[in-house]
Amino acid sequence: MGGIQRRAGLVVLVSSLLLLAACGNGSTGAANTGGQTSENTSAYTVGMTEYEFNPKEITVHAGQTVTIKLINHSKEQKAHEFKIGQQLVKGGDFNDKPLGYQVDFFKGLKVTWIQGSDVEELRPGEATVQGGDADALMKKTLSEAGPLEPGEPNAFVVSLAPGGTAEFSFTVPASAVGTWEFGCFEEDGQHYVQGMHGQFVVTK
Image (cartoon, rainbow, N blue to C red; front, side, top):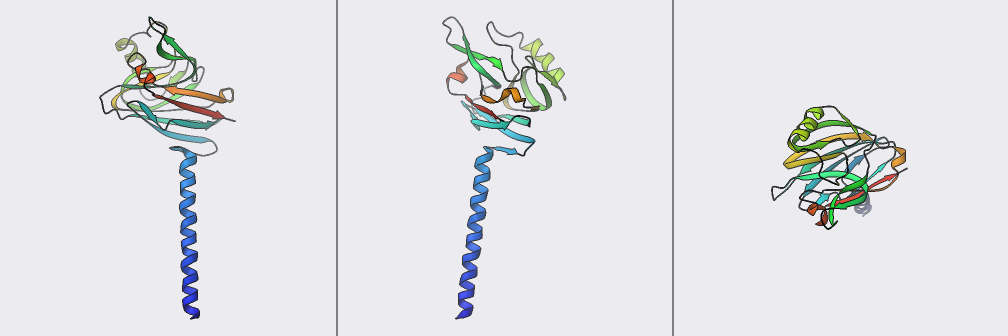
């Protein structure tokens, strides 16, 4: 009888430990919101499709070195782009076309370009973009895509063809603490209108 009780107690103990482990894994996944984080670094893979980003919210800390990998998962063979900023700018004949952000998150930052494939546009805005084939891609953007359209804010932007990828890193400045937005403004801003934007939160 004592042996049966000991075995039953062992089963309960093992079950409890498994439950705690499962709960721990779930909490970690939710906190990371699709990214891998530590005190000094964080990394996010951001999927782009019609018409949303996944994840829809990214949280980083001032002083962290952040790596973002973009993947265009378009099912409709559409290009998608990625900008981070504040204060939405609209233009067009009726001033109803989203064009970008008045305040560019990357202004004055050094962006390290890691890799890219099927990149349609890479514009530095007022950031310094270095590494990999960044120079060649920026020159290609100027020669093939041309200048910004009238009223479009000068900003760091990456645009990918369907199936394209891009990876870059930057250090978050203390001055950036607050809530920002990332968005896609392809097809005269219609991607943004359809809901293709999310929150980029910087904490202390």
